[in-house]
Image (cartoon, rainbow, N blue to C red; front, side):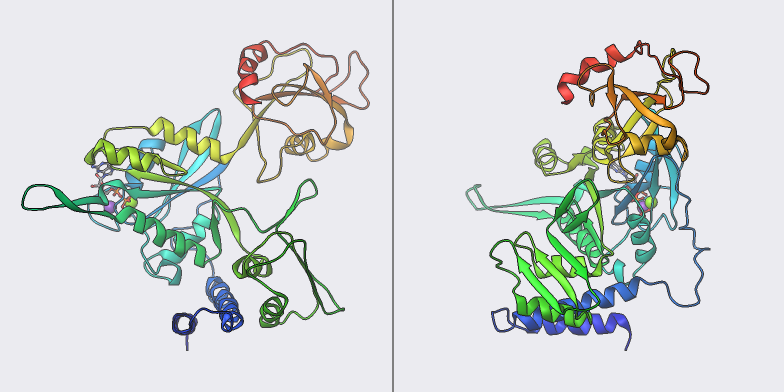
Length: 430
Ligand SMILES: Nc1nc2c(ncn2[C@@H]2O[C@H](COP(=O)(O)OP(=O)(O)OP(=O)(O)O)[C@@H](O)[C@H]2O)c(=O)[nH]1
Ligand SMILES: [K+]
Ligand SMILES: [Mg+2]
């Protein structure tokens, strides 16, 4: 039996099983079984070498954004509008068959936008080009889920005397949104969710702390009463993964799914903006409703409506931090920022230095910072200081004397002329 058939069989068993206290453990175990199979499904088939199907696009620029959606919602039209790179658009479904990259130039950064084939229910199991598309989505920093606003049809039934008696709101785009979210979730993508286990050396936000051990059995603890998972269920899930020695600490009232995510460890937490296209063909009241949904932007490619708002929302969600380098005695080059990201690589002075040159860090004495992250201008900062968008940084090296030091970065400072202008925005930002 193939992996997909086994998943289907377990899903059927879960559907048959009534949910109650007695079946809770069994259901948890089945969930873990499915998670394991789905992970297997994503592994590339043995003996196949990647390549040749038009989906391997080299990463370019400061971030990558993928256009995901059902066929004919306007993904290719949008790529052409935002990047100027032509991607074939037509009224028939599956016009696009591969991955088409374009570049958005925004705020002195370059963002790679990827047009992709439409995906449908079953994509994660390989329907259409589903698996390739999902793999590209997983490699992105942001997903734009494109939805067809015109598919949200309202149907009003009138009684004989002309009064509305019943109103159906057939929200097809909402259905599509749920299907796509499910498809992406089933292969380990988590949209707009906080990871249950995040630990970097700076922030430790752990919903579940989980660590495999060599010996000592399983220690299960929680810092608060749990309503979804108990010790027995946790043991059973771990057993399913053949884990017999581990430390598990629940810091929040997490679910079985969260626990499985932590054990699998291959989940990708990714931001998603819902883009409702084709608002030119629906009424203003419906546009208003869609626009009020969380993380959503309404647009029309045909009428070029609200594309600016989409770009600014995209920028906001990507959380890119532009830092301008200021050589001593000179103005920074405001057209050529070092671009950092809190999610990828970090935004500290150390990250900034490593970005310029990997050997630079050992020569740095301190840096001078102008901008919203500084309390006063310029602020002397160490390597751990966290930079913010549009900060200006001058590096002061250890060996340099106050006057006449060698190299690109000399000590002594002149305030950058444009900074006062730029920082007029500062009080708004902090
Ligand atoms: N009314 C309206 N039609 C649009 C808009 N944007 C795109 N379309 C039309 O929608 C159809 C599909 O557009 P595409 O850009 O090919 O859609 P796609 O999502 O790339 O489709 P596939 O590649 O087949 O998945 C075309 O006929 C477009 O002209 C819009 O803003 N309003
Ligand atoms: K199309
Ligand atoms: Mg297309």
